[in-house]
Image (cartoon, rainbow, N blue to C red; front, side):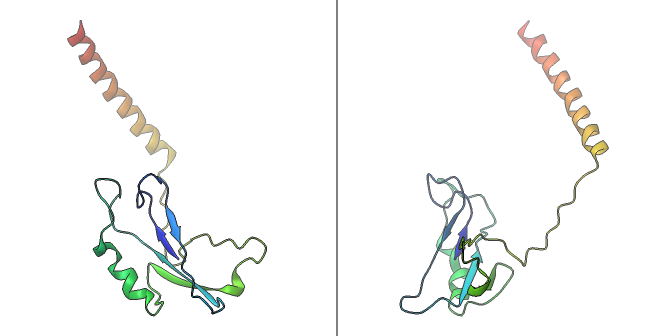
Length: 125
């Protein structure tokens, strides 16, 4: 499975997952690759061949990496066949800021916005 970010396909503003099957052989493992070109994709910034080099190299042997992993077919829920893409190699933890820090930043931004609004009102008359 190739997990593509939003903007990969024009008109589909959401991410897209492409499934590949081997004809004539039972599926024993599902191999996932999470594509991350390192930039936002869209009409003026399309996916390029260079973005797919690592995927093409790894899919030949279904090698595991930070962007790729395998799941045994037996581990897939037989009722739902949910193939949701969740990278087990992604150990990023979200660091939440303390609420006081967020409120302080909002107050500073509100003050700045009020100053700018005052200047605009002065210009308009």
